[in-house]
Length: 60
Image 1 (spheres, rainbow, N blue to C red):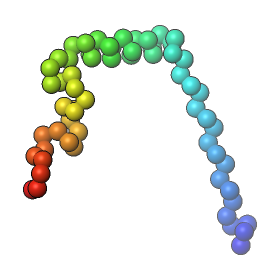
Image 2: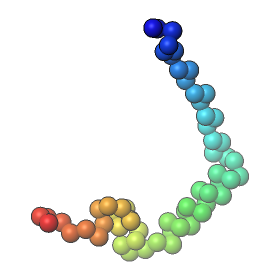
Image 3: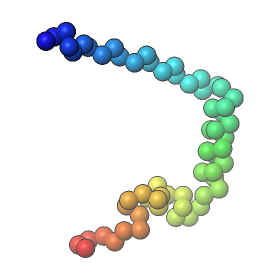
Image 4: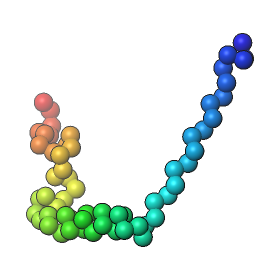
C-alpha cells in the first residue's frame, strides 16, 4: 500500500530579484512617482478599493 503514495519533491526555489536590475529600478521609480502624485484622502492606506472602504460602520 505504501508504494501507491510517494513523497512529492519540493519545487525548486525561485531566484531572488536583483535590486539593481534596470527593470526593478524602473518599477521602483514609477511607484515613487505615483505615490508623490497622490494627495489628500487618496494618499492614505485606508482609502483603497478594498472591502473596508465605502462601507457603513456599525450594525447593518
